[in-house]
Image 1: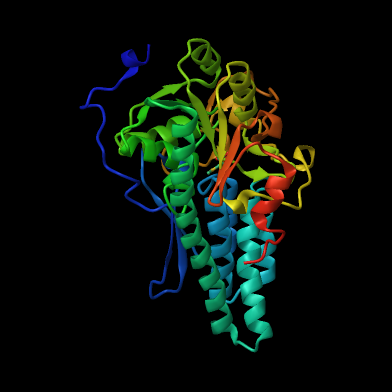
Image 2: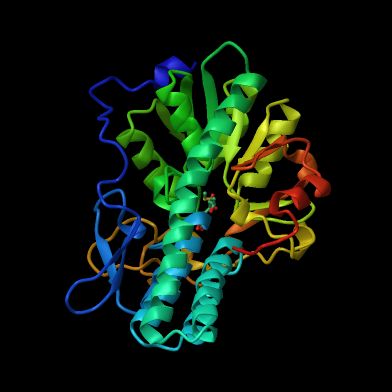
Length: 383
Ligand code: MRU
């Protein structure tokens, strides 16, 4: 069945990771800025947004111009460094950034880490400039650590796939977007698929379109195409028939928050995939850096799930619509009667018993237990 979906070599143009990095710090003569790739405009246009203060970054985070758990952490840290470098109130900026979206714990982690570096420097007698430098150093360190974590997770993840699925090309189903667009490196779940591709062991990447904002169709397909991977897009609703046809060897997803009991919050639609995977005896694997694990959230029920605007469901707002178009603005193509209210959680929670393994930079946790999760942070969130 899969072969009829294979692209011809002319259809796939390997051009590597996005030409523009997802995030970068810059210091033009007018003063420091944080430059982010506007993900609401992909795949049509690669356009950068220049943030001169934390508030602009908060807006970029809320509209999903900057998104995905690890990148949110990096952005949160740089946002605090930006506030410090520009002489704004650092504590205010850290609070605004940490609260910009509630589910991905990395965001608050990154913002608080840079804030702590700033405060420590001030307490040690540093002036404004040196304290701002300490915040920037913390952001750069987190950025670099995430890149290293990504590479290590990819290696652990591929070794796990090879062990679970000996002797063949892997047919991997993924949901949402977990590549270089959300990472200091090549991503989380996507980085595993990319490593499999480079090793000649990826038979197919099945890409869920990921309603309503189409992170799979717009972003994962974009990254897969740029890397020359064999991929096929499907509507989220088609996943069941794909499992039934025996076309999925493993599910690989990222995470926005992993609770102390091993419950995994990720893009809405992940939990139904876990249920399907269990029914069809297919491994369901979560790939996330340790910064996504939150020992302060005891269980899945305690994870705050972001509820987003009805417009995202009642209108096709995710389609790039030209200059100045924002997802929050509404004004997309209506697909429901005017005034229709939609249930639109951005995430869902998968219980640990449905997760075959959690892959972090520390290794593979399987089975997923509270004891195993506790070991990941070594009882501490410092540094
Ligand atoms: O709402 P988004 O686009 O920020 O959601 C992103 C996801 O759910 C990702 O799957 C998750 O952050 C893991 S990214 C490595």
